[in-house]
Amino acid sequence: MDVALYDFVRGPFLRFALFVFFLGIAYRFFRVVFLGLPPDYARPKGNPYYMAVKKILIKPTMGWTFNEIFSRRAVNYVGGFLFHLGFIGLTFLVPAHALLWQEITGLPMPTMPNIISDILAYAALGSLVVLTVHRALNPVLKLLTGKDEYFANFLIAIVLFTGLLATRWAGSGYVWLLSLHMLLADLLIIYIPFSRLSHFIYYFLSVGFMGWNAGKRGVSF
Image (cartoon, rainbow, N blue to C red; front, top):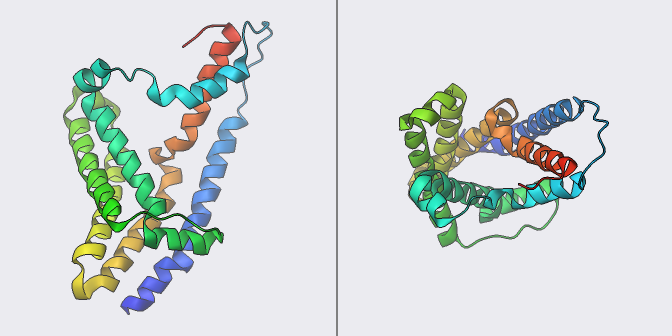
């Protein structure tokens, strides 16, 4: 039974999840793109396309001064960096995940040592917990946070936690825990297009538009 469940969540259900993911992301992406921009007949004072690309490339480091990071927003910057680094690294570079992506894409995937995978997993899970508590206690962030964010954080956390359990403490329940981990990961993939987790798509659109608008006006940012 455990092996049959594992084969299902790693095979047909994973393919279904990826189909829903790409279909949902494509729909939301083109829905935004096709909204278009209102006509603007003013002559550009700068290069909007150059500024759009520049904004996308340097946006993550804007405001990264020592005082900004460690005095005012240390939890957001450090915790966010550790979480995103860990989650992205684990998704693609863990040996088992890299093998799975290679089967899906047919392309060779680089891998990281298991010790690095463990460090990233603990860093991502720990920082996610800290960020969630901080968001719940910070008066401003609390007002901006809805049930979607908390549910997404909980789903990501149990995906990370079950992955750690399966690789380090599963024992005789390895196949069952691995199946649970894969099932939760599939559900997360399906959930992303319908949640604010899809912000990684809108990030490029929003900051690119900000740069484009700044370039058209001939101002810096």
